[in-house]
Image (cartoon, rainbow, N blue to C red; front, side):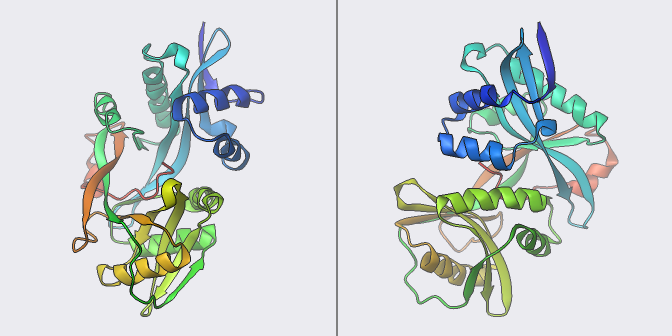
Length: 290
């Protein structure tokens, strides 16, 4: 018998096992997620004969238009099936249930970040559209100019408020202070943090993580193009590394070596609704917890 329901006490061990099978994340990361961010009422499970077979998480967020209007949205995270049921379409069943639950909650759109490039086609076949992109800059070694300005850790609420000020006037996803707090935990466990950058009278922000191979990934850097180099110098001073991978909103960093990346997708319950004219065009998602 197949059952779809929200998570309950006692489900966590099986969820962790499927997470490990699907994503191969370190156990330290998996345990920290379930300690710090996990919510039973946001976790949708599919069971067969009482045994967990597939799962996904529905994180509440907001889609903010260039004019400042916000549409409630759900961000699908950790979509995974047990190895033993691969190829049976159980993930698709959960996707459909997520859409139905979103509609019942009055949320008429869902966003996600495919874990692999090939999955963009899979989600596209189920009604998801490319919507969110960014530009990725890469530096093989730290910038060498003397850094000026100030870089300091930012709290989750401070970061969320600063981020919204910087993204005002553009179509973007607001993850809220809960999302910023989750990212702060990811950043701090890696040896980095969420930061505010004060440069030439302007305040920007960055979310950084240390990775393998002496690489630093700046999952979000919000600064004007004229201040990007100075901002990167500040980050390099705080987080010395052999190389840097830096994400900025699409359209930024055109003078630097980089590439544009299709990152996130959206599904709309009523795609013909005229309200979507307010949210038209490509948007910016941000760190995405990938």
